[in-house]
Length: 244
Image (tube, rainbow, N blue to C red):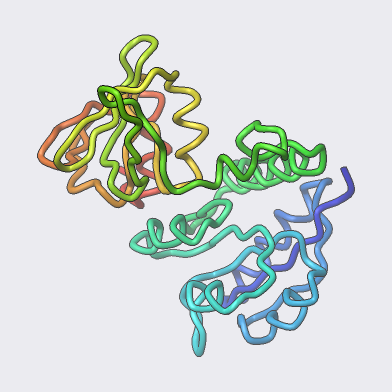
């Protein structure tokens, strides 16, 4: 794969410097430009020259979140910020990753490698979820059909609170109902992870919007308390901005 052309957008000189140094250490990255405001970066991004943008959120004039909403041609975006409360909103805008300042090089490298892997799959006509590109339309659906008696019932993704794995079946829980579907948890995870869901346990996938509280190794959603597996806790805390 060719080098990933990137730009940095941050109003803090110190952040621009150390992020530039981080980029220089990553052989797969090519730094095109560094900007101190989103307004300055807009023209270059709209031309499609950049594959990846490292974007600060809290900037004068136009915030990173507001800036993303204005883009017609959206490259991969990694948010960089000192404010964890924007984490969920960033993921709802389909950003590639969210880096909380101060950013370690190890965490920076993980984010870059995630983007590189995603781009490599796309270049090989493989959808980021591991699906052939011809199946992308199916994966972009905002609903799923499940058998209920003699009918196939449409369940909107926005209504799902969590999915529970039960051997060769999954149980889809909404606020008022639950549906049993013959499917594997891995398939459901691949289908839902770009739609605002995260796996928190080998047996549970939850909607980020549906989470009411997080405490200890527990997530509360729709009045139900679900366990958080040890190997999933770091990613959950990172996305929600609840690092301990």
